[in-house]
Image (cartoon, rainbow, N blue to C red; front, side, top):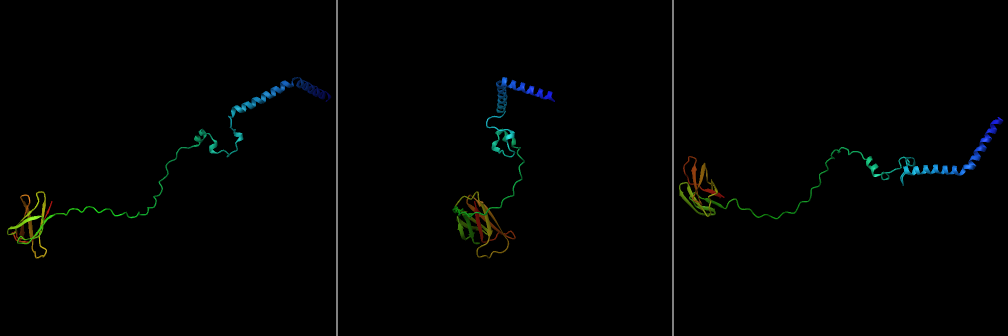
Length: 200
């Protein structure tokens, strides 16, 4: 036991003697090792940066991340969602102001006559002459060219008195005269009052 104590004291004495002789060198070595560790830490972390150990979970916000990190967080665009329900029909707007009245249109025809059975004109627009050429045959001349017009006649008069079946046939002579022939049910010419209109 005494031998062990003596050996420990001897080693401690030698260690102390070594430190006294080389303390400057040991201090320089310690400082160099510490400085290297500090420099290595600075090389791994850029300025104004923190490492994983310094970050508290859940404390970072989106604007704390770099553009590259924010881009990596974005997922692919999802499919288009279903169309929404149709909105309610809007209220009817107020009635607009009445527009300007248009120019009056032309009459359907300006050429017409009404004749008694004896060929007398009772109504006239545009006719210059009306004659009874024979039984059931009448000629009416107008004051314009009616070559490209059509003629519509019907038996009758304002006072009535026409009965039975009658057929009217109209034709044209020269450029302004309409011929009217009236037949009864047995296909015989007969005098009857009638109306004639010319449409151009």
